[in-house]
Length: 177
Image (tube, rainbow, N blue to C red; front, side, top):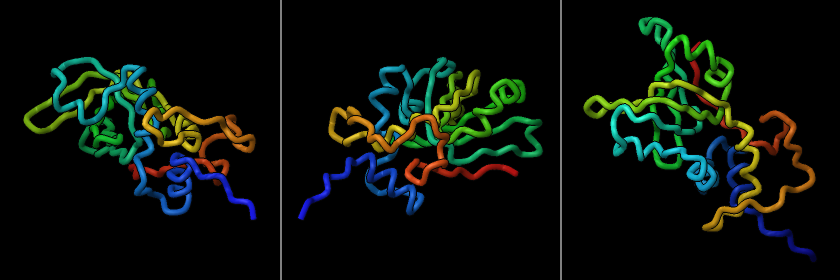
């Protein structure tokens, strides 16, 4: 009897999301953190300690998009990484410029200015980028301490959009209507 090879931890996370829409193993962005750190992205936990008005970049899974009627077109986006949540403020002119990323990304990078008033922390967006395709690399990560990806299996096609293949990780957010 042949034994199956051990499933990489990243693939466990992807399969958990495919079947349960959550995982108890590891946050998806923990696998991408070494790359994000190399690219200069801060964590949600860092926001509490960085200087106010500092320009920074942060990325996270979109949890909620809100557009209250009383906010004059401002969109509030809550993102999550492996350290916590971050609140983004997207002014109407930024929303129009980066509309596709703001309204469609599952994994969103925000470049903006840190603001803190008492215990309320948020980032005022200057730029938004859709990083969702990076989620499709999760199944390749072993979960070892170096978090280096293992070679991609031949059946995984990187040119397919997320959600096209049942093996892709799809994380849904709650959005305004």
